[in-house]
Length: 216
Image (tube, rainbow, N blue to C red):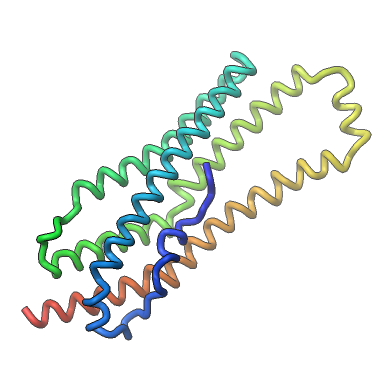
């Protein structure tokens, strides 16, 4: 599974101004931004979902290669496929709630506000539905392989490892420092996306929504 943060869903668009945005500009650019957001979310869901299936296939191949002793891998596969299933569910949800081109502007603005608020919740809770399951899957795979290595290590393997402590140090640093930093980076960048992109865009659409209501 790749760990691209969801800030990439919004970063291709102009930085939202927020509540100070010009109403005429909001109306003129609304449809373009709406289509662009829908396209980038579609790409996100498809790529992340397919990535999860691919990683699950790799885990299954490793399990097949090491034999029945690798049975805990089934839980790692289930966790990763669960994340892919989440993205598939997102696609179904979007399909059910999609408005046609003939829908009035007010309805489209309300739908966009609801969608942005939904995405905001996802980004702020990325640990619970994305990072934590993937972290658990990685931990299961690592512990499974470590247990098998302890049992099936070739003669002299651990002696050689003790004689080259730098290699062991790099392994420890990778799993204790590098991997946690990657997860923290995804979390931090998602929160930045909410602060810099989603919240200002929601403020823009709420301003447009209020204007449309006042002119009805």
